[in-house]
Image 1 (spheres, rainbow over the protein chains, first blue to last red):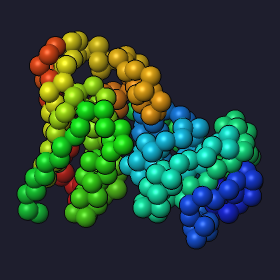
Image 2: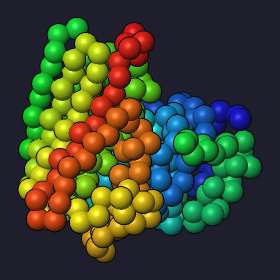
Image 3: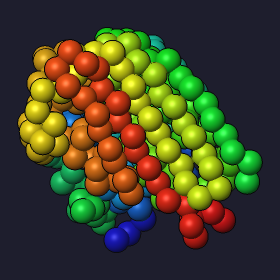
Amino acid sequence: MTPVKLSEIRDLLDATVLVGDDKLDISVSGCCAGDLMSDILRGATEGTVLVTGLNNIQVIRTAVIVGVAAVILVRRKEPDETLIAHAHKHGLPLLSTPCTMFSTCGRLYEKGLRGVEMQG
Amino acid sequence: MPDLERRFTIRANDFVNAGEVSLEIQSILKHIGFDSSLIRRISVCAYESEMNVVMHGGDGEALLRVSPKSVALVFTDQGKGIKDIDLAFKPGYSTANVKHREMGFGAGMGLPNIKNSADTIEIHSGEGKGTTLNIGFQLEGSVD
């Protein structure tokens, strides 16, 4: 697994950085993707990037609970101010990409990121 | 380590704040200095349980109890209760509505996830009787 910097991910996905402009040097060690938060809660997702199409506050809370390093919203999702404020509060980088979930995961995989397998 | 006990109120259908109690519990555990994998397991159980109370339980409360050898989470609510507990633990079984699913929950993985992350789990419930969920974590060898 190749660690990938957030700045590389931004370029790879033509993403907009909504929160965490100062944290683009962070490297992520893997990737987890899904719209179902209970799935994300099951797996060693610490330090990974969370790719999701779910655009509500529970994404940020789930991300903090499991310790993901950054969140990427797919399909050009535009989060509301509350979601952005919560990401700020927890110092969690938040990106939005025009790519679909499939393309996002494909590009990240091609770049060297790998998934987190389910535990138990 | 001194014993610690904290209580938190959880409101029914309060999706604006759903999860904040668990984040506070996580922050207390980080402050105490437990290792990250234990904090993660406890936080996941807290979050799934809190969401269950918000979605199904009516008003309720969470209790965090830290003792020298264990951490306990107790979620109590006055909601409609669980008719068939075995069925509620079956992965994929859910009584969630559209609103719950929009929030990324309600896919029947809550109780299975809690069972998977906890050392001990005990549930008392009945139709119309509310629900009490006791979740335990052993500490031996877990503290830095």
